[in-house]
Amino acid sequence: MGVRAIEPALIQGYTDPFDEDIFTDRLAGSMRRTAEAAGISCVAFSAHIDIGAPDGDEQLRRRIRFASQLGARRVVTNAAKTEFQETFFQRIDGLAREAEAAGVVIALENPGDGRPNIIDNAAAARAFITKYDNPWIRLNYDPGNLLTHQPHLDPVTDAQDLGPGLVSMHLKNASLQGDRMRFTALHRGSIDYAAVLAHTDGLDPVPEYCVELPIRVSRAPGGKPFRDSELVPLETIHEALDASLSWLTGT
Image 1 (tube, one colour):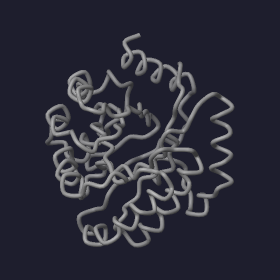
Image 2 (tube, one colour):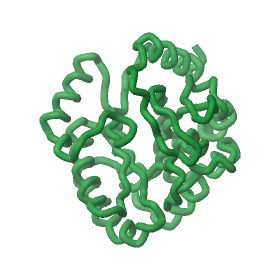
Image 3 (cartoon, one colour):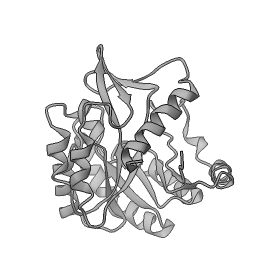
């Protein structure tokens, strides 16, 4: 498949359940060594939380340290639901200083859960980064999250608001199957990624792209995630990843 970089994830609802004790230097070191033995680097760590929620700042501190031990350049998280925005803004300066000390950028991502957030879409992301311009607080955008978070928006049109502060993007696609949005290979879902990338490829700098394939997960209307009880066959994962990377790279 030619994969040379990955973005490990530990996200409640997306991965197996875990508690906060999992974020140890020992686990991060083990994951890093495993990746390096395969010739793969960990460029980012996906660790979505609500920074404004109770204990959200401590949760992010643990994840910043974990990302640093992985050798990752950034930790990807949500910002905060609007009900916690005051606490978020009280915390963000201190967290930016800790991110700088660790050498890990905090990349804030638009969510997919349908609950109003400080960063709901690309326009909100751009407004945030224009107001709060700090090199250690940047943006990660996911067009696929709009499908369940703000389904009234067109991801292609929304992406036109992407610009300053965008360091990375999660590329995932989905289509409605029954009463659930189910994730697919990048070019097989309802989002026209050729049109999205036509804009983002022209940005300076061009964001890093991460293909995200949570094909064991589906989302109900409103955004609640569900994990299938059965594991996805490895050959199914390989096929979807191969197809996505081939489409993305034109090979």
